[in-house]
Length: 156
Image 1 (cartoon, rainbow, N blue to C red):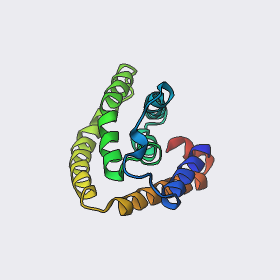
Image 2 (tube, rainbow, N blue to C red):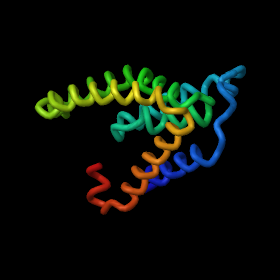
Image 3 (cartoon, rainbow, N blue to C red):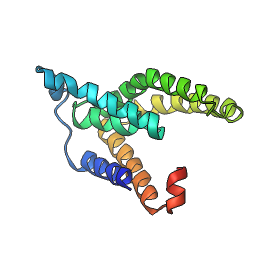
């Protein structure tokens, strides 16, 4: 339930609060400020490994809200940051024999085509509109998790 509430809170923050001026927050000058991206990456990696989510749900809002990135750049950076994370997680689950290969032979081509098309389309949508669409997706996901029965929450 806390994760669902976090999704809704972050989404509302993205919709209601204005974005930083373009890249204003990227001027990292102190060691503490340089640690922020590392901590965001650590959190995204932990979420990815533990829940199977992370890049989009953690890095994109952090990129927009904390680093002042435009939505489409936060999304592109999220994909790139999750490449090594995905490989590490896949290797770990492969070693534990926790991968359903028969399902993946169909999911991977569909996901590849969908991701390519979605990434192309995201670049055509104005940043603020894309940010609102993403926020609405987070709200939908959070509300759905909040309304799920306890046994369904464990499966999703």
